[in-house]
Length: 297
Image (cartoon, rainbow, N blue to C red; front, top):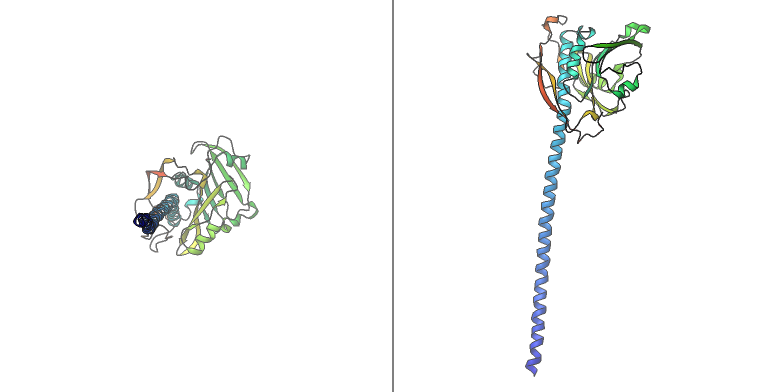
């Protein structure tokens, strides 16, 4: 009978021993699996963050680089022929730069003496900002007299339905001073491409990025080529075929696109024959709203 009583006790001891040995092993297995799972999740998150970062950088480059290239060529044209943008013929060049990328809302060239020339798109929001803009207008070109004009300084505006068909013109008094704009000041102080933080365009009510590229003549800042990028124009599905400025020959500089164009000492700066030869190539430009945001215009 003593042996019979000893048997259950031995079984209980063996069971307890098995449980005691099994629990640490199970805990170890659970902890190991948790560590492996956590490591896999962290690795996947890091890969996704790195991919998103690279995509964001690529999107920013796709947004800004085409605009910067157009501004660089406009700056080179202004260096080559200082009087070019004081003529109506120059608005064709500005129009080509404007339509080289859908995200560009306005392209302009401004000088230290206050002279300013611009070509912009016209949409419903811009029409609402000025009742004098004709309802059929889709494009706008204007220039502002230089400061020596004094009280007679005007903004001379021209509107087009299909470029370059003029549908309306009018002049208006103005006290605009482009020199106080942040991207003008930045381009002047840095001597290179300047990009501002987003701000609200008072004409449209939508956020814009403003870019400025200096015009340097004999290493002296005389003005800048600028552009506004309207962020709400960027759409994930937008693939636009548009002309892109390209140069048939170097604009006297082998520097990076952010480097300013300087007048070559040996060239006549007023000769129109020295203007850079430009050709227009068709390029497909894709801009994504999925990362920038904003409602369609």
